Amino acid sequence: MTGIAKTVAQVRELIAKARADGKSIGFVPTMGALHEGHLTLIRRARAECGHVVASIFVNPTQFAPGADFEKYPRDLSSDAAKAQAAGADLIFAPAVEEIYPPGDNTFVEVTGQLVDCLCGPHRPGHFRGVTTVCARLFNIVQADRAYFGEKDYQQLLVIKQMVRDLRFPLEIVPVPTVREPDGLAMSSRNAYLSPEERKAAAVLSRGLFAARDRFAAGERDAGALIAAAKRVIETEPQVKLQYLELRDAETLEELKRVDRRAVLALAAFVGQTRLIDNVIL
Ligand code: AMP
Image 1 (cartoon, rainbow, N blue to C red):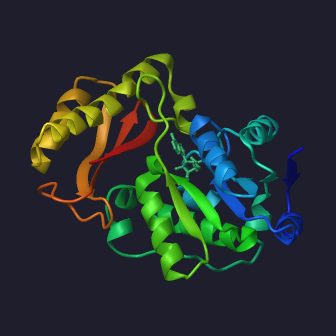
Image 2: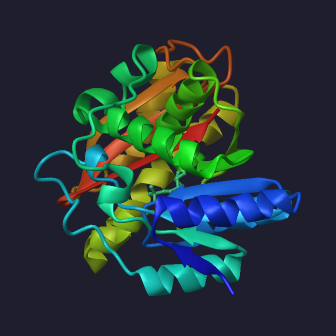
């Protein structure tokens, strides 16, 4: 039976027990509204770790004022059942005050190129909120390995940088993006889409895949690869690109030619809903 711990004290005690039993700790941080993407992370942790902790915490500090923090989908009992079925041993579902005790005054912020491009300028304070909550969760859970999806590719790099810089004794394990049958990257925010928008949203991955096909056929020019993706995406009037950029897959420096591992990343509005996706070249 998977337990649900709501306080830092409870979760620390249960994890200490697993440690005392000689188990390695795998950690999957989520904001809930669990889908196959999250469950794939949990299954991977299950396969690689003795004790799997999944957190479900809608982190207020990574939402802009007036963004979807209030209406973000929340269903703890359904999420706990799904996480358990995927192999989680322990769910950590804290109240906001457990993670942000009243009077707290500490943030963790990665600076530089990794946060100054792609989603960074469009979501001021977002990555600072992500690194702050992850630093706090990492300190609480003290896992050996933490699992992050490549769907949020920039977030993955930012977290890796933080873990390196702050010397967390923790391995960050990237997990490939899980997609719907029509290619749309799974996301809790897909639930906001109307049926028409949901259909239109598939054009995002189709565009990225078109560029990936051009790359496989030998194209290395960034402009040509971006144009190949845009040609597909711009056929859909319900989809408005915010950015579509080709960058070095480690440093996020902009690339003119793909002469090393690269990421083609986009953000787009489908109606009112902002979605992100990427492919690695
Ligand atoms: P979230 O609940 O959206 O904060 O996501 C929690 C974790 O699940 C993050 O590491 C995400 O990158 C990962 N994740 C979300 N969607 C997917 C997906 N479609 N495929 C793989 N990982 C995902």
